[in-house]
Length: 112
Image (cartoon, rainbow, N blue to C red; front, side, top):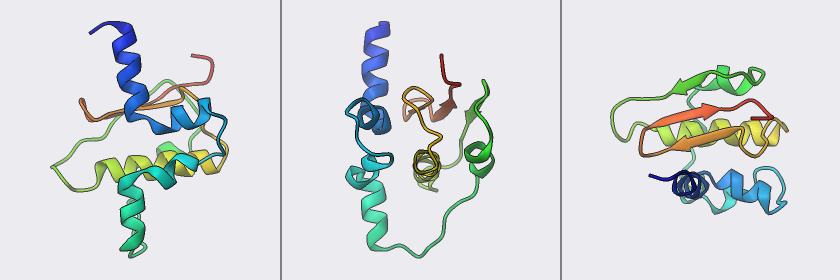
């Protein structure tokens, strides 16, 4: 896969990149996210804290891999974490990337 194809795919699966590029308010992408929008209809208030340490830590160069069985909420936990960072003003374009193909999330320090 060429670099431009990888970047295109990452833009596709990281709606917060598109929202930042369009100058939308922090977290605006969440209203259009099917998973988060559908969850709001049946929300019981539970939020997994599996990525809480990642969301509250200052940016660094670590790679965080979130893995587990299918349909246990990995993607939802990742999106909740990114949304929390966006609303706290900790999210910049390129700082987070997620890949459904590899099941990994990466928090990238600003300036990279």
